Structure formats: structure tokens, C-alpha cells
Amino acid sequence: MRFGLFGSAAARRGSGEFDSTEGFRDFIEYNIEAEALGFHSSFVVEHHFTGFGQVSATLNLLTWLGARTTTLRLGTAVIVLPWHNPVLLAEQAATIDLLSGGRLDFGIGKGYRYNEFVGFDVPIADAEARFEESIALLLKCWTSEERFSHKGQFWIFNDIVVEPPPFRRPHPAVWMGAGSPRSIRDVARRGFNLLLGQYASPADIGDSIAVYRAAVEETGRVYEATMVGVTRAFFVAENDAERDEALARRLSNRMRQLKLATQPDGTVLGGPDRAVGDPDKINIDSAIYGNPAEIAAGLDALARAGVGYVLLNGGGSGGGTRGRASMRRFANEIMPAFSGGTV
Image 1 (cartoon, rainbow, N blue to C red):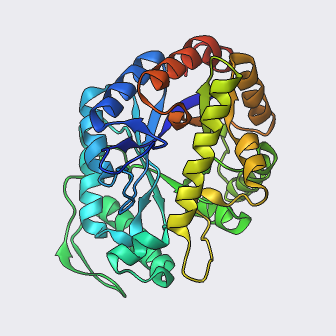
Image 2 (image 1 turned 90 degrees about the horizontal axis):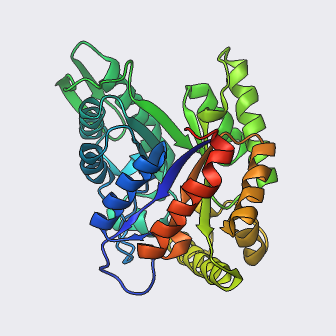
Image 3 (image 1 turned 120 degrees about the vertical axis):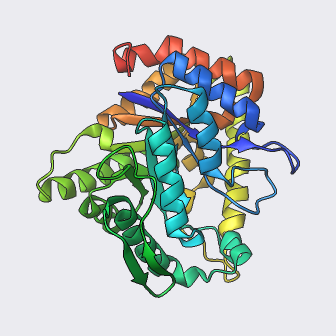
């Protein structure tokens, strides 16, 4: 089993406790230590207008992280394409990939938070069409050796060639978030790797992996377990009370996320909460919190579901000193048993 990190930094502009590592600089130091402990990657979110101080300029943060690390893969989970100029984005992504020696894992999505679409004055109904035009342009920017022009529904570019070229050919590794069987099959059809969210149960994760694997093999490609990244909240607790406190904090954060994603008619678009049912049960079933034995049991359940790559979100710790201690205990006491001592 391979292990990476998933999460965010917090600028502390807002108030209260955030489900992320405290402070951008602390986030960088946290990831530098994670690399030394043997973690394979770090995937960083993109969010805007939250008031929580979450990461908004993901590629900027990853550029700094890439300069401070040597082996850690640099992931976006996810860049929301409908909000970005695709040519500028292609240039920025290629620059990180080039400077890092091909370490960029470019995760993309369509977006789901209503407040962000309102903030950018982008109709949420246009999200899919904008996504499709943008991804086609990104791939062309990275692979075209000749100048080209583009006149689409949302973007017009005249006689362009993107520089610099990415390090990895034909383009950086692309990951795409998905939840429904239809969208998962679409990820496989495109030849992309799959990102699965942190609230689905192990059984549902297993179903999603089965759909993706079948779709990958239908295209004639060989499926590998590391083509699917599964996000899980984790926290190595000192005792039951600390575990329960962290679970309560995670549930509160989920409710904040849902509020930001809720449209005026009450509809909530997918995002991090595709799982439906009792919030407390979903929270307990999807988080890997507790003592080392309890966490190992949670990883065993994921392994039985076919998971080979886990992206750990340490936000349940509240960040800071407790977050570092939790990560160290995971790396030293739990990870070797599942990774054979390596990643």
C-alpha cells in the first residue's frame, strides 16, 4: 500500500478551528517531514471565499513545496477548471512539472461549491461545458509542437504555443475526482487516474474501484491499484476521549463544507459529501481514527476493498503539535506493516 497526504493550509484569516494544518509555513514544514518519513505525495485542495483561510493559489503553494523537497510528488486535489484560463493554467502546471523533474500530479475537477461559482460570477450550470473545453485545451497545450488557434464557447486564443513544455511526456500525470459509476467510467475512458473522496464507506470504495478497473481494462490498458487515490481522514489518538474529540471536529467541518455547497433551493452538489445517510455514522465509518490497532483495522478494510493508495488527511488532529505527533506515529508504528517499510 502506498501512502500520501491530502489537505490544506490555513492562513488564519477566519476564526475557530479549521480541519487543516495551521499556517502556510507550518504546512510546508509538515510536508518536508512527511517526505523524510517516507510519504509518497501531497495533494492540496483549491478553495475560495470560505473565510476559513484555505488554500486558494494551489500551484503557487506547490511550487514552494517542490523547491523544499526532492522526492515528494506534488498533487492538486483538485484544480477546478471552470474558474481558470486554461492556457495560463497549462503554462503554470508545465513550469512546476519541469522544475520538479516530473513530480506534478495534476488533479482536476468541475467544482461543486455554490458559493465559489457565485463569487466568480460563473453559472454553475456551465461547469461541465467549461470543464470539457478547458481539459481539451490543456492537453493540446501540453502536446502540440506547432502553434494553434482556438475559438470555443468560452475561450478564444490566436496563434499560440505553450512554453515551457512539461517535463513528463506527453503531459503531466492527470488525476480526476469522481463519485458516480458514470463519472468513474468517464475518468477511465480519458486515460486519467482516479481520486475518490473521504466520506464513502470501504464497501462503496470497493464498488467504485471495481467500476474503474473494469473500464480501464476495457480500453486495453493494464490496471494498477496505485491508479486510484483514496482519501481518508486519519488521527492516531492517545485515548478514546481524544479520538472522539477529533471525530466531533471533523463532523463540524463537514457541516461547514455542506453549507458552502448548498444552493438556494437546498440542493447540494456532490463534492466531498457524495455519501448519504446518517451524518454521525458516515463520519465514524469513513474516518481512520483511534489507536494504532484501530487504524490498522481501518486500513485492512480498505485493502480488502482493493485500495492500494491512501491519501491521508490529518486535519482531525487540529494541526500543530498534535498533527505532527499523529503523522510520526502513523509513519513509525503503522505504515511499515502496510508498505513493507517502503512506499
